[in-house]
Amino acid sequence: MEYIYEENRIYAEQEDHLLLAEVTFPARDEKRVNVDHVYVDASLRGQGIASELMLLAYNYIKGKDLQIIAKCPYAIAWFKKNEQYQDIVINVKTRKNQ
Image (cartoon, rainbow, N blue to C red; front, side):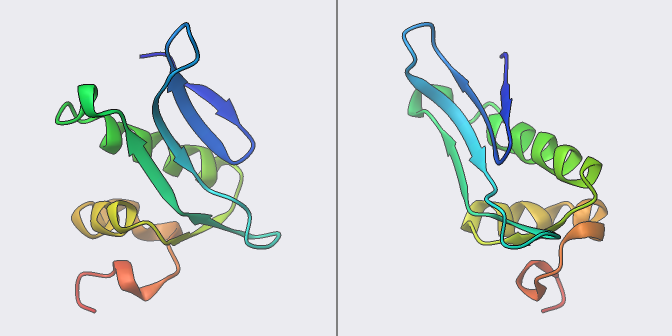
């Protein structure tokens, strides 16, 4: 799948512009973003695409030297499951021991 990167969004769409998958992370302030939405079209669910989007977003956000506040329930669950990516996550909801 080919992903398109925008300032606060990574997504994929069909040729007819139908949205297939996206993760959004609007700026909260100059140093933090909110990962607030992860979407995968029903026809693609169960293939690991949401997890792939989270990893792409993590790498993109880390590359910009920003910190993450996970707001989306999927993002929170993903960070709990993938502790190795919590280094730039600052909200406690994502910590396993919380």
